[in-house]
Amino acid sequence: MKRRALTLILALCLPHFLIPRGHATKLDLSADVAIKAANYGHLVYNNERNSQALYTENATLGFVIKDIRLEKTPDSIMEVGIVLQSVGAGTSSNTATAPQFADAANRLPHSNGTPYIREAYVKIHKFLKPNVTATFGRQNFTLGQGITLASDNLGLPGGRVEIDNVYRGIKTDLFFFRPSNNFTYTQIYGGAVFYPGREGRWELYHFWQQDTGAGNDLANFNIASKTKKFTGLRYMLTHKQFGFDGETVIQRGTADKTAGGSADYKAHAFMMNGSWAQNIGFFGRSKVRLGYGRSSGNPGTDPAMDKAFFPAFGKKHNGIERSGYGAIAGASLYDIIKTSPTANGLPDGVSGLNIIAIGADLTYGKLLLSADIYKFRATSNASGGSLQVASEWDLKATYPLGESLRLTAVYAVFTPLGLYTDSQQAKLFYGAVSAKF
Image (cartoon, rainbow, N blue to C red; front, side, top):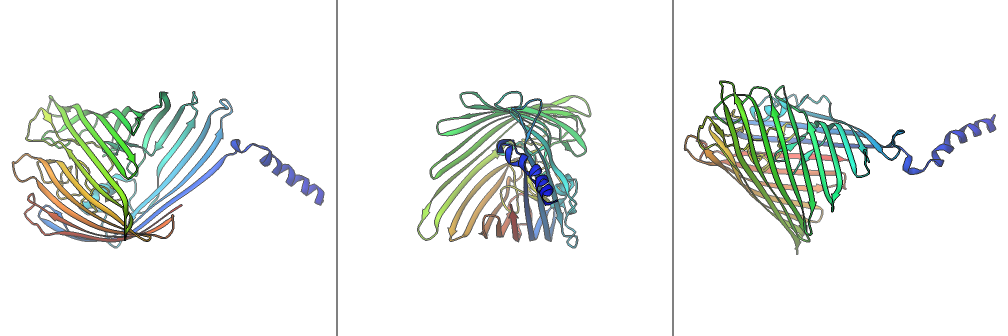
């Protein structure tokens, strides 16, 4: 009986040891949890001021099955991935419906802590040719710095084909996505080319964004359908202590107006970020950061032209809060935390942003101390009024308890400037715990 049982165990185990490891299927698990308790004081919204406590939980759980051999194409390797995300605010604070957080909450399938599928994809390595990788389904994706296109915690449904070493190290990406925005579907298709230079890396991209649903951007007309075209060039360089990341984008296209006739899109934007790192006696390895960016705006109410740079699917959220320049402002190159009910959060008729960012990271043992100063200025004001939006300064302390766990504390002050009649400062304090493996 014992001999028969031993024979059965060997029969089950031997194939596992005899199969080469390159053919073994693997399951990768990943998890990321961020718990945050924040207090926002005197946030600007029209002529009102709101103070709110906000408790948020933002968690992801990913399952990826790798090294799946395909019988009909033995050289190809497939992986299947599913990533669940849960975003929620404390029910006692009732903050998800506040104007500063409502847009971010409404774009999510659930903002009450109920998990939703952020990614569900199939990736095939060596697809048709050894240098081709294809990904189909809802996937994580960021184009360039994320100024014009990013999955932004939602995943982008569609397909992507990556072709390595097309010519002398040049890589090409082709993509097609069909995300939804305000209950209408948008078709996004285009491509990017990556060129590894001697000292840096170039990225050139172009894509079309076609919307067939009614809506409006920042111009003074209603839209029945529109097509926007974005062309961008990015350059990245890391050389010893110095780092640079610059990107410029041109926006073109046309819109069909509900009242008849058409209008043209003619806008642009750029963002440059640089950093310098070196050892500073008492603090050790430290870094200084500098950023400057600008986007175009509408100088008036031209019914045949929209000059405001305004992508629909850029990176600008983290759960139900903003993610961008400034812990309170959360600014992108074209919008900011809600200070009015307009599409870009700025007062009516104001569009485009100029951003100046200066910061430093100082290390003291394991503790990382960061200080940042931001200045926000509008590009255009259709009424001819002030262009001064706000300034902000942030102080941040981060203490890692190993590679997988860290504690963070932030204090930020946001000062409204000439665009607002009330210059009372808005303040934010939060503490956060984040863990991942």
